Image 1: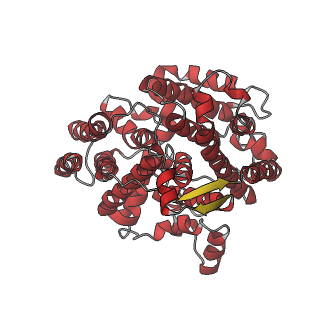
Image 2: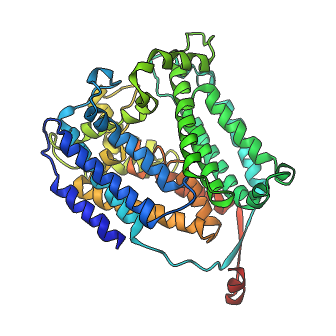
Image 3: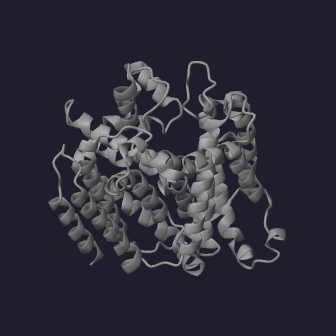
Length: 474
């Protein structure tokens, strides 16, 4: 029944299709947004009521709404263009909102389409915990060595780099180490949270019963990122902890989730603006600089706390314009970068061998090229809908968003029903990208899923159970 309700919303959205280029239509944007909200609430409030609100689907949908709907709604409520931090094309807001509505309704349809049969546990998996801890420590040290002074001191965010490269991330081999470090931590948490859940639920005295390494590692990892002004790694680690906490320790209520979201938005905004507002020698505290910046802009309303994410919607407008002015859909060519990235250095080798540029292999590279030219030191980014539209058009938006909803639901069922370690690892991998995935290419989840699987495979031993043992294990 629930799929038919989503189909009803989808048909209504199709009826509301706007012209490709048109003046801003408040009524159409309102109706499309209302349909999308109804689609989400149908799943959350009617068919999928849960006590725990810190879930993969909630993180994904929250990020999606901020990226694809915040600016259209702000226009609807009269927020003026002059307050935008980047320029948007008003003429494509209607069409972009329509594509976004189709995409999220399709995602919700995929989320509610199937109830998968619970898999019997036919194997006992032993995690080589010490090996994971050693790997984390080694990678942490290697990252500190290779990241470079400009990254670790935050100079990269203050515009002090020679040549003006403000990309905001550790480069070269450090970028691979950084990714591996985060994914090893995710696998550690996939082991630690289910094992320690019972102790933590009991409250008093739990600290004396669990391995102290993981809490200390998480705290150190998050502090390292926040200290240099890099919010991404901190959000990823916190998301993994809270996703698994809500499943294996104690449900996080709607009230608690809202409080965490508000506090998180404030802290991340303070750090984001603080890192870019420091003086050249970084003498001011990053927190003080950020709060001062917020006070300067406090007349602009609550939306400033999510403005960085929301500004990404302009990439969708750029994608619409590019597809409809330069020769059409790219038919997956702009996914090659994400596929190459599965194997370290394969992308660089392939691009060099075949003479490919960034704008040949990714939608973010294509949009950067259109906006800033061939050798830009900064990037435009992308969004999940922009990437799908660039590569596969409207049909691709619907089909691939439906498939992504199915993936999120399957992984969620796997951890809620305690179907095994592999599902916990997959949930941890998705948690690292769930919130930010809407401001990136569609395949952003692919490398974390594949690499965490390989890490877990390397650090586990498996015993296959007989049929009778399998029944006992369940």
